[in-house]
Amino acid sequence: MTSSSNSKRPRWMSHALTTRATVRRAIPEAALTALEGAVGMAERGSSGQIRLVVEANWPLLQVKHQSPRGRALEWFSQLRVWDTEHNNGVLVYLLFAERDVEIVADRGFNSRVTDAQWEAICNAMETRFAKGEFELGITEGVNAIGDLLRQHFPADMGRNEQSDRPLIV
Image (cartoon, one colour):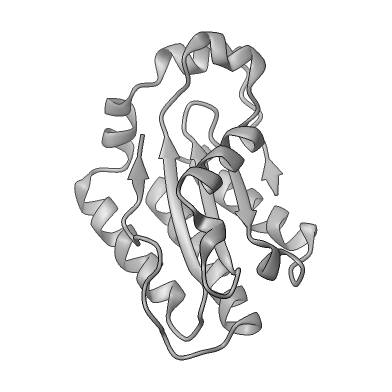
């Protein structure tokens, strides 16, 4: 599911002005550690897996031809989020340059959650991002996904199939 930000500057300019250093200032090491803990806690009480990817920007030529949803699907595949034992992995993708959130859920999970539920999570996260509250926005989104995991896939925590550490690219 997707929700896009309402930035007034052109897409290419947002990508040109955003770097990994921009992301590191907004989400410093201490926040990454806290987010890692939040992902682990959100997975507790369920058999589901949450993977978080924050991508700073894209090469300018890619901006014209790529959509955030398409890029999220690429990460979903590359990180093998689809390859969990119960088909209930979820990728949370943040394209920082656009403050755009994409949630990609595996088939076992996606069939149980409505588009409106995914949209609500994306919108709530993006509202926080617009206020500069990146750690809080991500934490709230991850917690909401954790609630859905426990609702639809209650279980004792099995092995951790995906890293809880956010991936910054």
